[in-house]
Structure formats: C-alpha cells, structure tokens
Image (cartoon, rainbow, N blue to C red; front, side, top):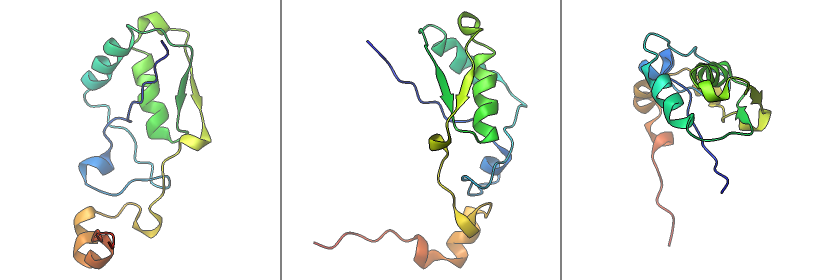
Length: 116
C-alpha cells in the first residue's frame, strides 16, 4: 500500500507574532526546540520512503532537512523542491499581523454565507 505523508513546516517567528505568511514572506524556522522535529522523524522513520518533496520556501526546506537528519533509516534520502508546492501569497497583507487586519479591514475578512 502506498502512503502519502504531508508535514507542515516548523514554527517561525511570524507564526509566533501571528503574521500572515505566504509565498512572499519566508520567516525563518525557529530552532530553539528541536523536539517536534525529532517526534515527527521518529514516527516517519518507521515507514519506507521512495522520495521526499518540499516547497522551495526556505522554511519548508529547513523543516524537511531537520526531520530527515533525524531519520536514521533514511540517511540517503534528499528533499526535492517542487515549485508547485509553494503556498499562496497574501499580497499586500503578507507579513501583516492578523489582529491589525481584522481591525483595519474587517469587511474584507468577513465570511459571506452563500446565497440560496
């Protein structure tokens, strides 16, 4: 049986600051606590992998490499960046704090119920 595992990048400074972070805002991954990477690696290392793909964004590549480095059964596996895995961008909102956007652009952030 083939499996596909999708792993989100690690925590970044912008995550901590609650800033919108998309394709244009690539805040570095925080490496103050590597425990989450070790836990993910320990879980994933029990499976056999033919390949590992990543977004080309630095935070995704860094997270992937931190995980792979902790997977002893997969020491030869390398990440392959794929442009199509890059997340969406937030345009002029990139890097803005969510609270500020809610305060300044509430009408744009409201979810509109579909018409019946």
